[in-house]
Image 1 (tube, rainbow, N blue to C red):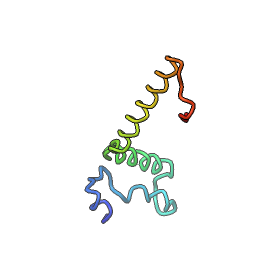
Image 2: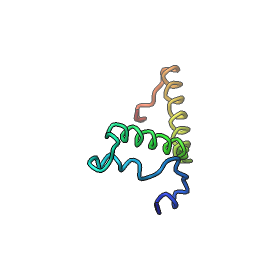
Image 3: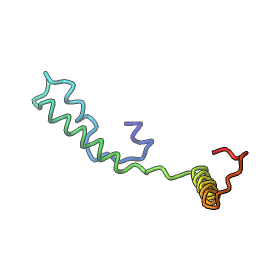
Length: 87
């Protein structure tokens, strides 16, 4: 429970529910039911996570790639590629 408090995620289910599949001899529920509940809980938690955004470095790389690509195709169109330029 301490880990969930650090993440500030409110769980929509009881964290002990997925563990019911481990102790089959003590429970009345079947393993498949617990597996489905655990999977559903994981998907619910995954939806609440914030998706990572592109970093400024990624944006800079994309911009430079675009510039070099446009220069390359512009040179091909004009039919004058410099011999010292690497592709």
